[in-house]
Length: 387
Image 1 (tube, one colour):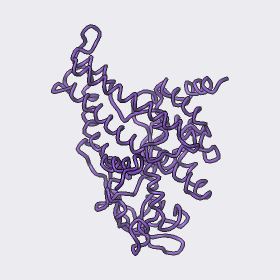
Image 2: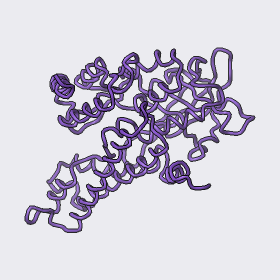
Image 3: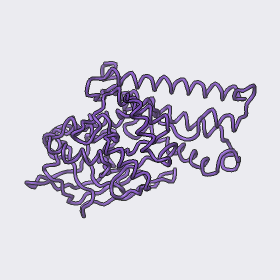
Image 4: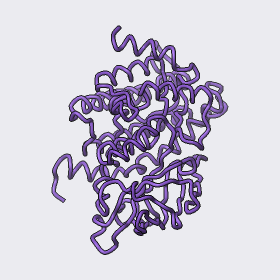
């Protein structure tokens, strides 16, 4: 049996119907709610290594080649199967540990990420250290076999559900700011950690303030060398801004009903086409840009080095993907107009979700590195322009 046929048969048998189509992808861990079907899908996929298909099998991955992974993603899209697990563990920390972690760290942390047992959050930004991240002031004091961490992080996505955090800390305040930073892993389930969710205009609270008061990080969970964490931090951001799974699948950051379907519902049809010519043009342009973006992502993966580690060009994908997602939401809201919520064309909850996504999407050009930061990286690292 070919790999495609085998994969198709396995997915049909093992992916529950409720885990297909639109919906949230669980982040795993011990605190966030999951349905029975979501847990079943996660456990079955993890057993086969399909939560992280291209990671080495020895750490719980599927050990798939890039071609096999593309087939898996295509077959998942065919039945609209949602990923069995998602989050910072699979998208960011895992790939970084595979490159920079010790063998002991890989064996201890990566299989748990692959099985969805741990929800990870990111401790980077601080109230006074956003775009100038290297100015961070959260400190870690060496206590022999462990560090004591004190300080504050902000915009800590999903911290209220997190079991562990990967955190940038200052371990040497007497050297240039980029040289005194270390990359630490430690548990969020300890007395020295306080989390306060931040309510956003969209009504959701995906971000948090996180406070550390003598939180303990073991020496065994220092990734890389002391005071050399900036290099690791930058590599992880490259994974954050692209995500190899997203690149391979050619997906953009879009949500809600299909644009042409919405246009036919709200604007009507004429001669089998969307009635409003301006709207028809805008949707066609967006669709062409999205397809070009997806094809460029797939080509980047195929041209990547053997380990598929993203480079500086991923900032292009982050920048373009954020803008495409915002344009998608803008078109959806423009089509609904003043009738949103009582038009009867879509359920009130669906229209409410579209409005919330539109509000939340405004942050996409800031979160994970602002558009301005991405353009600076593109200018310096991709185009080679002078400072």
